[in-house]
Image (tube, rainbow, N blue to C red; front, side, top):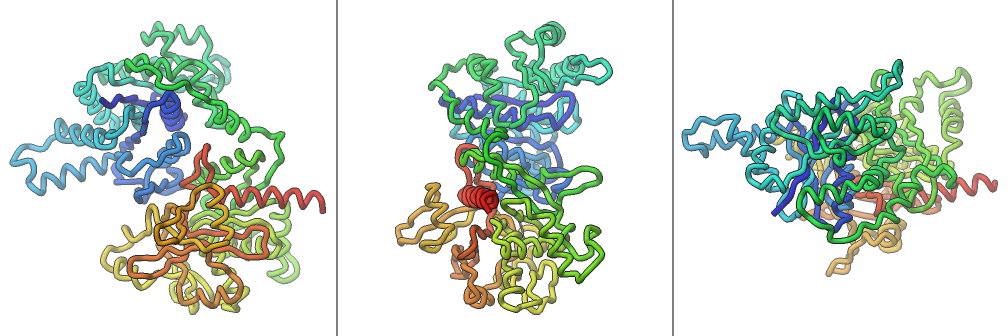
Length: 576
Ligand code: GLN
């Protein structure tokens, strides 16, 4: 029988409930159990695909094509295991499923109500995702006391009714503020969060106390007496420099064994945290050789905030690669607009192209590698293309992801194939040279389905060219698969609409660009998946999103190759 760990939040959101849930799952895995995670998002959207990344963080793409909340990404990075889209539950999905069933007449004339129809739907979905696992960690988005949260807490009680209480553990993640004027850690908001949870008929077994500093004994006792939680259940969760230290910190308080005991389970294996701890330590070890990476993107400024969360997985993929290579990754986020002609940063002399060149050198000369991640729309595109020219001409390691590949192909077409109007129809629909375009096979789809539902989403395999740099990297990581037909394929997740236009492939290849991987559709259309430049220290780009397949214990091959090349570039710079 599956056991459940329910993680809810108190006091405020954004204090690391996702990391706490992922850490619990990782710990239970280390004790030998098969574990998965479910994220419940109480918003009405069906999924996170249409949410603005600057507000909501990155859209995470699952292997089966789900566009999901970024917490699912944290889960995968921790448990080193793919999590399908059914593990993301939103209020929108629940209500549309129930309404659809009502329209079909499935309820046979019954009055369809919040209880039991909505709550049953929640429970059914939890059981569907839980199949095949011994323990499931369920994170409930938002905080207890939110109106939207109530349905889920109620449904969870039904889950309790179906299994014996021994099969469920409740963990409440709270925040203990330290007001500046008193300098004293306050437990009152936590006490109130516990009371709100009690009102839902739930008593937490564990309180994970997020705070700047570890919670001291006095405050543990305060929570114990006011909230009636045993001292054993009060777990310190102080701020950490790297999230990957959280499971190890929890284990210092024997959280894993305490959860197992509450669930009536015993450990199947002795955890071994040595390798994990070493990787987590490397991520924050500034004494390691430093590799300076510039990520040039557009979602970087929202009001006064820099929302680097939009590229969270890209950053983690770099950190994973750095940890495995024993280098310290120093990421700088650069706004693509700063490299455009009308940029306020342009100095007032000489010709525009000279100015851009000076600006590029000035702003990029200190970096060992340049990465352009995925993106949509026209904003910042000119700046990104200028940056790609710089990386190509100055032999700076470059990794292009999705839009970062499309723009690299456009740059190549413009500057090496003399196609000065080369562009993507996403930005200039009437361009004379649509090097990146919607393919005819997609046209119909778009006409019939409209804008939504027309993306290439989730896992697609690519046949990779023998002897290519891309293939060597995937093989070194044991991530290339030889098919019975003899072809070697690699699989990555996708999230995009436009493709490299097949009409230009021969011309681009003739000019020296190597297309080192293609996805072959059933109708035999070939979609370009990887490019690389010979004679360059590292100029590789992919139509896919390899960052979604990077885990602390298993970094993504292209990131490993990129960071390695950037490290070598840094060493060479020092020598020169
Ligand atoms: N905007 C491009 C497309 O839709 C690239 C998308 C991306 O970078 N994820 O094809």
